[in-house]
Amino acid sequence: MTKTINTQDVTTQELSDSLNTTMMRRILASSFLGSMIEFYDFILFATAASVVFSQVFFVDLDPGLGLFLSFTILAVGYVARPIGGILFGHFGDKLGRKGVLVTSMMLMGGTTVAIGLLPTTAAIGVAAPIMLTLFRVIQGLAVGGEWGGAMLIALEHAPKKRRGFAASFANMGGPAGAVLATVVMSIFTMLPDEQFLSWGWRVPFLLSAVLVLIGLVVRMKVHESPIFQKLQDEAEERKVPFFEVISKYPRNLILGIVAGMSSYTVQGLMTVWAISYVINDGLDATHVLWVKALGAASTVVVVWFASQLSDKFGRRPVMMGGMLLGAVFAFPVMFMLDMANLWVFAFALLLTQGLVQGSIFGPFGAFCAEMFPTHIRYTGASLVYQTSSTLGAGFTPMIASSLVAFAGGSLWLIAVVWIAVFVVAIGATLLVKEGRTADLEGTKF
Image (tube, rainbow, N blue to C red; front, top):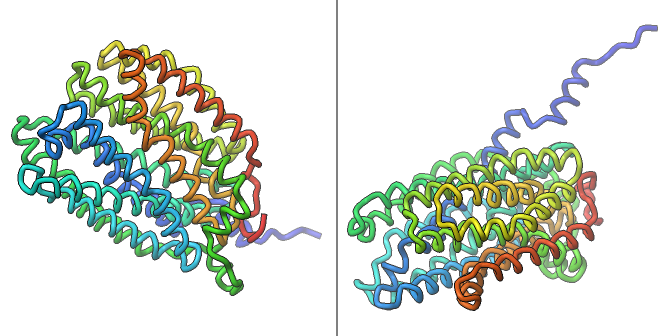
């Protein structure tokens, strides 16, 4: 008897294992664009803190102190990110991913435009830096809620064998937003200093309104996560997600945070502190920002490949490979920074922001998500991601500045701390259960 093959079943199976469907393309675009826009706004602030805020909002202070205060306000935004993860994660786990994503994008866009319109200290006095700090807190809350939803709505729609790659679109959006923010700001740094300080730096912030409008149009067309909808249909009575995460999954939470800190330590050192360090050492600010954009673009490329490798070999091996490279590069990179050469600095950024951070960052979205069940996944994944960013990147510029001062201008102490962070992160990653084959539809792990 001849066996008949049902071509419709074969096609359905192929589609179920594919990301190349109309809805999946729309979901991945939404995840990428939303994350890109949110991080455009967030990183734009970091870039401005490095090159302009000390001259606009702290004009009567010593330049070094003004830069330190700019970095302090920058850190406040990072502190707010875990709080945003808890707040938006609560509603994302209770009510759904999509509505929270729309809210976070509107909040971030409105705040960024407000920063672009903020009067200087010369105009309204101390109210200016106070309002700048408040706006930075709101930015931190918004970006704290964005990543978890953008990542999960892609991961929870994706076939099991492509989850790592689907989740990485939110992670690719972050450095893509950094590229865009850096390029736009660098264009305006080419203005004469007087014009740049008076109005030029404001234009990149005001452009956020256009980006948010585009992102909202795409995001409104995306369906809710099917895994979340299935959970809702079961009408299970659920506790407050945050309390369940910290009471039932503290080990996963702590290990995930420690692992993620490695990537964000690189980000804080190389894309914020090192930028101000080499500019103060004599490199042209516009050229340095273009190099920073190149480094962020390289992160997108490495994330693309690393996430696909994680679907084949697992999240942990790929991430630990990046961590090992980070530890090896620590002293050579500090030596390169001290050379105060633009091309050498560019190479250092490609090694660290591109190869090291990209290798860790590529699988990190799926790594976070696969540690928690569906009913607390938004909160759990967001807490891991946002807390690691706060501890790894939020305070790094201030810490690095202090270490350099303590060591009499030498960078060796930074290299020692950098190596220690990566070694501890490797140990934490080894203790996390590999999640590549985890069943995400179960409410209990």
